[in-house]
Image (cartoon, rainbow, N blue to C red):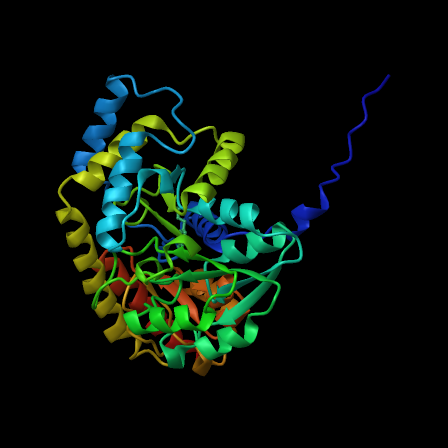
Length: 395
Ligand SMILES: Cc1ncc(COP(=O)(O)O)c(C=O)c1O
């Protein structure tokens, strides 16, 4: 009998799964490069630095010593201890190793937290514009995604009165992110206190995405976990990708009350078994070792931010706030008269500059573009020369 092609009938939930546009723009930019075009890449959100040498050495050493086997789903004790010590110090709250779950990158903590805590039909409030995976995962898991707009006039920090108006009996989880992708907005100590007051003693958990916690240009990082009485209501997401330029290693973690940690570990057992062992050994060395490379990287991002800020505000149609953290610039482009996605496409195709449309981060990103400054000053200047020429010619 002749074999027939089986029709691909995907599960309905797959139609609710979103994506991260940065990866798509990268593919498009690479296709243009393959045709001989010169493109400056300011689309992707990863440090352009190498992983610090002490971490690479610890990883190769771990491989030679046989750290090539399965480990516990929640992470190797040595790394869970190192993370607990580090978070205890940085968030000024006592964290135990049992409250840490190590995962492959920060991203799984988003998926696992929503999967473990949120029922279909529950509501999850999330920042918009914001990291697109929040909205994607909320929708995918059948919950209701409730955006809280982040506005430029508030330096892209959420308005707690608006948050209060969105909270109701169905609200199960609130996601916050500071320093923020894509806006570079940073919540102050006062903002965090106001947020805690606004949520009050309602039965709501907060997923606090602090993956850019070490990339702060002014002042200090503040976490909801530090606020008195909040530790057990917060799931903290952090990791090694941005801090130690380890995006490709896939090493991140969540910090949460120990009873929830056991369930998140069960999700790890079911999905990944465990995070790669030698990368965990290297991660522990990173946390315990010399931190000067983190300081240097942060200073360099700040220098680039300032170069970008000074120049972009002189370009016709563009105006930009000075972000306080992370490594993104989020200029307002409404005065160009162009829609964000069309402008991002035109800059890529006509000017050879890859940036992302603000709408890649949700509907409230309309009117903005995101440029990553994880590139050399030389390339940033070249990108801005091109954008300026394009604006002078087309606007
Ligand atoms: C806000 C935010 N959270 C989480 C992540 C995921 O980080 P990782 O690469 O460690 O999974 C990113 C990566 O871009 C991010 O911007």
